[in-house]
Amino acid sequence: MAKEAFTAQASVQAAGEIPHIGVGMLGYAFMGKAHSNAFKKIPYLIYPPPAIPDLVAICGRNEQATAEAARRYGYATYYTDWREMIKDKRIQLFDNGTPPNAHADPCIAAAKEGMHILCEKPLARNGDEARRIRDEVAKTGVKHMVGFNYRFVPAIRQMRDLIRSGALGRIYHYRAIYLQEWVMPHYNLPKIWRLDKEIAGNGVLGCLGSHIIDLGRFLIGEIKSVGAITRTFVTERPLPDGSGMAKVDVDDAFASIVEFENGAIGTIEATRFGAGRKNHQVIEINGEKGSVRFELERLNELQVFWVDEEPKETQGFHNVLVTEAYHPWISNWWPHGHIIGWEHTFVHEITHLLDCIVNNKDVAPDGATLEDGYRACVIGDAVRKAAGAHRMIDIEY
Image (cartoon, rainbow, N blue to C red; front, side, top):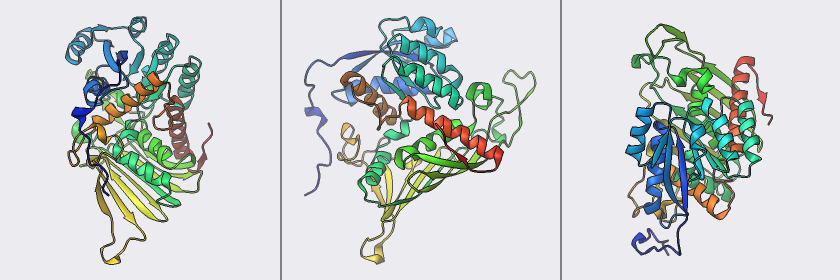
């Protein structure tokens, strides 16, 4: 008998009064927009929601831009100093969508005010800084999550379910690439913050690499050791104000081989010099009983191959459309075949955190905690060290 394809959302009813959680958003740009969009969708698309997010305040350094962001996204007020925002007693959830150099002090201070923490990835510029965030926030007892949103792609979650069920048998390989092109010479980019070690900590290793490092741990298990090579292809860029040239001190690309504790081996590669590649993330996992493959630019699909499939004449990779109500998270959305997008991963991610806050659940293992963010940073440090030493480096937490 076929499983139910989709649910009739019109018949869903809340079982009682829905709690409200006040949100303070630090940062109004890329991630501020993505998170604000998710907060606004949760009350009516994830129904009944675990909590209704109240957009209390947004914070940024530029007053004009921050005021406009508050009006655009629907925040009740705005601040230009995060120290003032965390004094606002209406806020229970502090969302940090800023660059990595602004993660530590605001997150720690907000947690000490009793606010739950959602912090964008990478958690910090390096492992030591990430450890400080993890340790200080842990002392407060608040819930915390790092924004590894690809954990909340339904097809990725389905991939993980297949692995954990044993359907793929012993896992042999994890292959992950994440390719973009937007810092190539023909874009004529100045030295923006993502190309500045003091702000970002890393280049593509933190920006894109942290995602597929985290997915390796999420899907396969702990990483035991790494070897790597890194490159900076454009070593000087104009300063943003046009006053001269500056050295680029972060990586443009890296390629790494990894050994997992369970014996699987992997390759992890990322670049922002992949001509023609816009947001090309591919994950392939090979096991003794089959393989699975995921492409982010086709995020509603999962390619599956089974070793024992019959008849052999038609054996091969099959494309599964992950849009059925029995697939992870999909029952909240549309009838089967009606696809979702990248922005919906943030809806899932934040819904999970709200559920953990309201119902005192553990954020892990489905969501990434500050521990997961810390471990991704430690592995990133090891990748840099391995590239410099030209040898394998053991992971030590």
